[in-house]
Image (tube, rainbow, N blue to C red; front, side):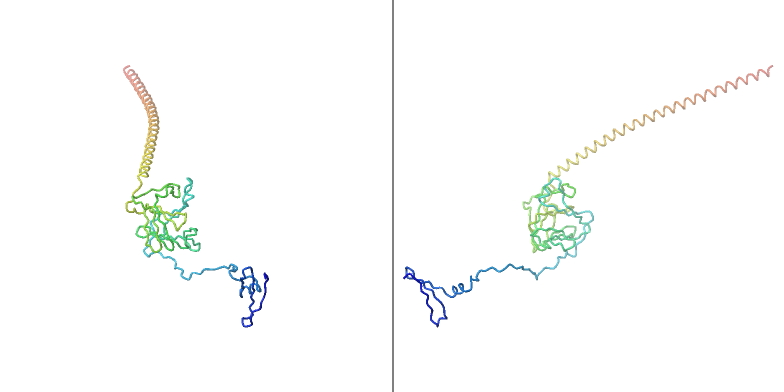
Length: 305
């Protein structure tokens, strides 16, 4: 009682061992072949982690490089400029946007690849190697999502927008409440307008925008405050120009008065000199006449004698 006993199994059962434990309740616990293997061979190999290995992904269905439409053409020289800025940097009052002239460029591609020549780089994790592209056709710039989503934003969402010289551009707005639009690779191209000229790739914090004579969209117009500000600035410039003209006119009048005074003095001096010479010449003529008369009188007296 209260002890344990080991018993051999029958030969027909493959020599399995059973361990019987007799407790207070008289219940028995049996360990099967797993327990035997565990006792003889060490811990169980189940759920054991293998050493980590490197796995290389090979995409066999890579898309071919994007090609622009055949009707693309280069924009007029000096008309358009591509600007780039980061959201954290643009709030600095001394910050300026990086720029790229679009002269003789019919299309521009954007992505995270550093192996493609001429690609505008954005190293965000969500940006594909060849993410999006813009191209110029029929006097308009179009945006195409190539391999990833692209979000087109209104310039009213970016009050700190600046060009490469640090000057704010002309601001345009519309009555529409939709100020953002996301396009996917399966969507059609998107025309860039004067208000919707800002776009970003995926979830990147970098923004790109095009400055230049873009076409006006539906219901787009220049902001009233910006127009009044420009009118006021033009008025101030005009007042400054008028003030400068007045100052210049007064200065010219003063210089002209001094010049006229000098000319008048010079003329008076010349007239006085001429008058003096004329008087001297007249006196000399009178003296010669007197001398001639006196000689004539003396001759006539001699003849009379």
